[in-house]
Image 1: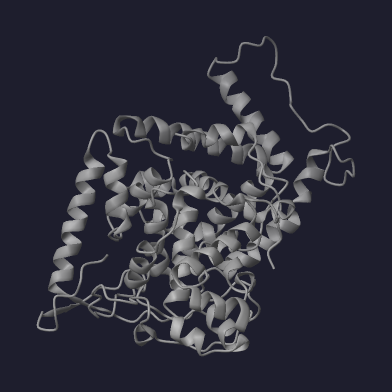
Image 2 (image 1 turned 180 degrees about the horizontal axis):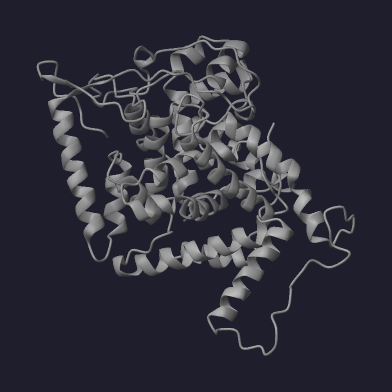
Amino acid sequence: MLKKGMLKLPDKLGGLVSGFDDKEMKNGGSSDPVLESGEELEIMEPNGIELGHKENVYEFDDLVNDTDVDKADAFRTRKRPDKDGSGRVSVMEVIAADEKRSDIEYELSRKEINLEKLRRIASMGLPDGGGLRATTWKLLLGYLSPSHDLWEKELTENRQKYAMLKEELLLSPSEYTRVKENAMISAELSGEHDDAGPLKRQGISHGDHPLSIVKASAWHHYFKHTEIAEQIDRDLLRTHPDIKFFSGESSFSKKNREAMRKILLLFAKLNPAIRYVQGMNEVLAPIFYVFSTDTDEQNAVNAEADSFSCFVRLLSDSVDHFCQQLDNSPVGILSTLSRLAELLKENDEELWKHLEFTTKVKPQFYAFRWITLLLTQEFNFQSILRIWDSLLSNPFGIQDMLLRICCAMLLCMKSRLLSGDFAANLRLLQHYPDINIEHLLRVAQDLSADTSSYSLSL
């Protein structure tokens, strides 16, 4: 079960992220010639079934390929099965994808970005490759401002601030002292040091050494996070083991894990009340992957710094879910789970009654992980990216769309849930089957709900 704490953003972190305050097309028919899709990252293509709008559109168990996997309880992270075979794409889908790419490229090239239009395009799914998703996510998260002319300045400043935070908080005291000494020597040699006389050594004090037990010791603070760092290392080794970007012993995957380790450890040090919670690695993974695979070389090189800032902003939107003291408050996780139940009741009272009273499968048994980890444990990686396009682009906030998708996941399993008992339904929802993502998102978007009462702005 996930440990919880309170997120507190220090002033220096606030400076780093200060800028934050501010369908796929239908298949044209089987007569269309088909092309084999290329494999970029184990892509799961829609199954080609035409998804016309019908009554009870969410009842489509025939669109689902179930996979029985024995797993642990509802709160444990879940390894996603490798279900992504090669897809088949119709000519109309290829044309639609080209048009979507052209639309997003045009919007991103404008001097002033129209965020409303960008959200509409992104909600239909962003194309892979070309760095379009990376740039769009940065805009949707508020990391980049709508003014194109400010991007270079904003990126430079935020990346420099991240480098300073790493130097201050991730280096050991002796490494930090050595860096400062080298900087002072360089300044002295270049004539930038105004002090007269020889350069003074800025060493560690006599009482501050690796074996010091004094709580104020710099070494004491450094070693205090050793246990957290070890937990992060263990979790990163389990992050998407089927994807070479994250897994394996290659220098490439090791470099990526090391960058993610720094991001998570820095977050933990800057937020001592919440520190690191198991599963945060899964939330970071989509961001870091998308930013690292940006075709813009400069952006890819700085993926670590950009990912940190966007990870902080993304997590801030749902931080109250990790604070145990707020569990019973209007902003706590229990309140969010209650809103999910209400959303289901409003859209399908029959299913709600069956889960709530007949089988007593409460949302906290399955949706806790769905919500806290932003669905990163329920679907294959490519589907996660598509779902996040809709999450980040929702004008009412991430949490609004997240609850809609969670509710849609229940509705799409209606007939199976109505015929299942407690054990069967719990197993189904804790190990959600493979599903047509475009249909799921369409069901989510069409749900009736009063978003004004619980929308969270970015």
